Length: 219
Picture: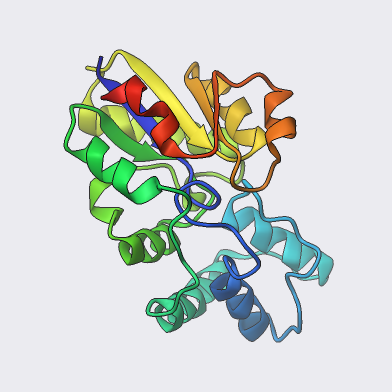
């Protein structure tokens, strides 16, 4: 079997905690001259651009492309400031699993609300960015299904259609829904935003707490 495997990032590859979004929230406060501009905003499984829209709405500001482009410059500065810190840490046993997959016939890609620049900083810190030649990112759509559609099209443009099955690996209810939107198998990992019980309620194909539990699927 050759599989096309879509990974989420936060809560799946990267450990999700209160520090995960620090570069983004710091950039929001600096750029928009706010204090605690991200407080009370749920970022789970959402695109960074969608979150930016919500921050603007809460502060009676109007979105413009120029405003967004200016924010991206500030955001990159904060990503650079955190790149040698321990903010981005491996979730479960994600890194050895990805490295093993990279040596197999399976095809790796991602579906994430992260902007590609944020994804690169995070995954480069863990040493796995190089294993993902493509992916769907926060700039590919405001909503998850739009990002997923873009991810699939980009994967096909690079890999072709020579695969037998698709899998989506993620930690949220929306990851499960996204897999079904694509017609993919669902691997839900209970290490992030949703509990094992919440994930189980949507009947994913596989429900795990570590990647070694699904090694037999791929190796």
